[in-house]
Length: 596
Image (tube, rainbow, N blue to C red; front, side, top):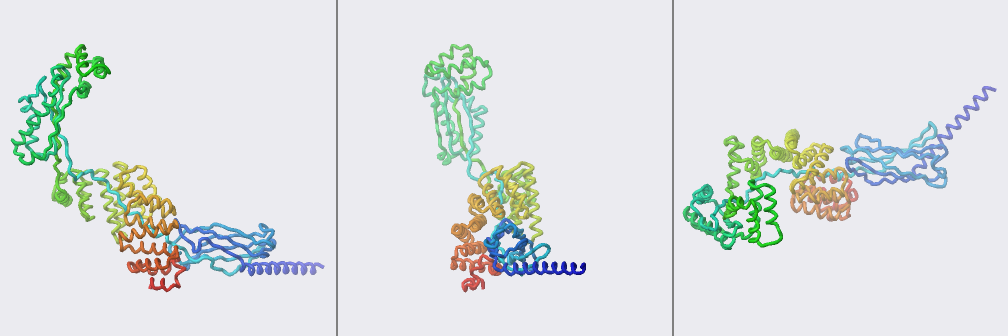
């Protein structure tokens, strides 16, 4: 009896295993009818990540009681395999599976790595019940990864701090005031031979290039002055006559005719009186308030107010100490500031940089400006190095770092490029240590971008934007920020930012790329056309224009742009042949001709 029981148990167990195996086999066979939709397909990389959605629909009657069906996804490329994840269908979740198709959808993502462009998203179906499983053959569900977003260019707009030097003609004022006796417009020898006259004569003797001479005559408020309405004008003209005489004396000749003389008389005006009173200390504040009340009073004419002042205890001091200062003719001379010509500034700066001239040969502003006069980056670096040693200021360190950054962009040796970028970063940090400034932070962002330190670049550009700056640094900030936004898949934001970054070819290129990635294809085509118009040798701009045309299904425009791109850079031939952007055209004769 016992033996018969064991035999029966074995038969039941065998039957169960056989039934399970048969069930799972049927599920696997039925799974061939499953529907899988991958969006997008081909896959795309954005912000260094491949994100996609898979929706799965199983056939009716595929799911059996107590079973599970798993869709296991991997991305394969070359000899590499990346586990992506799975979608699991449990029979208990689909009680109506005999009549309704089980459906599920899930978002997936994986980090992009070099070499993934020509790979496959594959799925393996696994039917299971208890500890038993049955696998379906692996099947391809999506082809490769589109990598257009990785065509972004690192920001290249370097921000130089303004030197502060103005090489344009500038006029500076020189002011001399002559004083007159009460009621008189006679310019006395004590004035012309005194300190003020001597100063004016010396100025005229130097033959400074003079644009204009403004002569303003005034008078004091008391009656002896006020009754002579022409007195202020006569004082101004007295100085003009003297000035013209001095021009003849110092042999100005025709140069005198180019000087504009402007005479002006200030009559019955309390402004100069109040200004003088404000600094006058020989009366009390109470007395000042009394005087001020009379002058500012609403009633009475100028003459009547002066009569009211006579009744004040402080009037004698006004008459003897304040009024004489108002009997003047003020002379303001606008003369041209003497400046070295640009070629002389550059030549002297080269000598300073070469050690054959003292750093004091030029002042700080001139030396900083000199570096802007040469297009040669090595010469510019030498001058900025001398500028840094002379001033040790934030502008000098920023500009010295900026020229290192520009040299790094042209360096083909990676080790030397890294060395230049590191040197630039050091000087930008020194600049900010002297004084935090938008230029240095903006340049730091560019430098960190070159090194691939995106988090540091983002922090630096945000700091730069917070500090603000002039038009040039704003363009630099936006150029860098826009490139970082593209790398972060913020395409609409990048378009807006780059619209305020100037019109350099690299800025326009990144804006056109962002427009492609934001599906604004016609706008992208127009922007990229601006790039190739500005630089007809920009192969990558033509290539991105070909992508925009391909997405618009404009094969003629696509092949024309692609032909131009490959003609300028043969490396783009292999890229185009592997690029899934052109997958719909690989069998087209036009495409084949473009890449041959």
